[in-house]
Length: 595
Image 1 (spheres, rainbow, N blue to C red):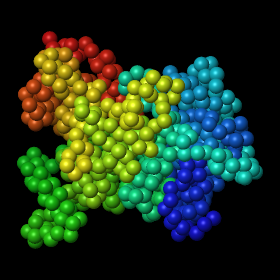
Image 2: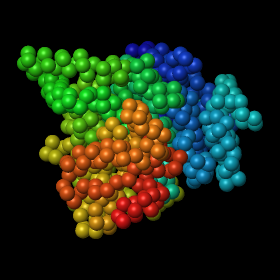
Image 3: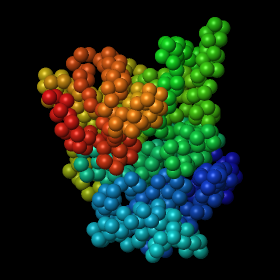
Image 4: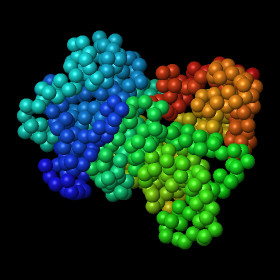
């Protein structure tokens, strides 16, 4: 084992070599923290490699061959990472399956990928696969993390069979992998039909790890709190970048309602997240301020942004402004930082757009949230704002090694080593997505300013064309509505209709206390039908509409008596709206809004 201080900064050539190289370079540094009952346990890089090595040798003894697909059907946890790295080390290909998937959805991913092995979290996930097993002729083995399950080998049992395995043969496997080989099949969220298997290569992940180091995003000593699903490419890239630089992944305990509490315990320095957690925290912080103090809060945010920027550039701050800033620190900003554990250097927001007002608020509070952009097809990499180069409301500049431009019709195009190789067993879709000169047709509409900052203006397939011929992009107004303390989700509708309408869902965490204070029903279905709630939401809609031209404004709305969920198929696992599903599920309600 090499000295822990070996900080050679050359990216491991393939994902197959990542775990062994990290152990050699970082040895006794902490690679992972995770819940063990009520306590936090740790694994060093050396210990992580031992577990990965044993499991990889166990997989080889099981008969896993180079290029075989191995599915992992589990929540984000340290065992997910161990299994992931073991599959890569054995020169096989990881195929994540969202733990929220139905048996039918599992059947599609496992069957389409041709997986021979499925690693399941527990008996519940095993049951899903067993239910559709007759339709999965390629599956030879089921394994389970949390056993025992009758007739199913646990990961620990399989790893035990690998402890006396031939490590030289394992290193031959590692050396046999080339950068052009696939390492991961990520299946898209299926917002427009059956999910497509995006084939990602070792080269794409190597490019991502190099970019992480070049930009200084992560480093030794960083603690990255990870609650994002490892079935999503965003979390996969974060994991790979963390292991590359020798930082620590702190895995959430599995309960999303305890994320804020765990942030206080883990005290991370970096937080990758989807916008929803920032939107909820922003709503909580703003909602705790009395109405007559809202204007003061806005001034405090403006001042906070100004002071933070001055501190970053070394400019002097006038005494009067410094005094007012320190008052805001005591009253608001210090509390906001404490919600994140008090040590956060920055957060990365991806997978969906986030409102500039929210970014300004957190930056003023000393918890900078930097928006980035990428797709599954780009190994989650494309552009990002950085601590020393950012612009609120943009998705930042292109990453090193990535070429981005705007097509004549406004579509963002991208090419570089981060691009996927193909859609698995779907050559027609591949050909439709990659241009003749090698650019990915992203489907996102955008613009670029004189300094190279990109802005997303909409999604081509989400554009609403009203009966009057006006093109509308719903994401911006929907995002403004989600900033409301009372609103969970908003979906605009209006294609080939005279004007836009919307369906709105309520946030029970804030609505129930509000209702109790006023003696209103606390049952969400009953509360949603009250005139008081309708008036409350109308006021929020009026405020959001005021930012837009008359033709873009939502004219009518309906309040659902329940929220959108993954179980109904209306949300992806990263909380993105599946518009086609929502439009279909609520077609009659949308029609009613035009009667």
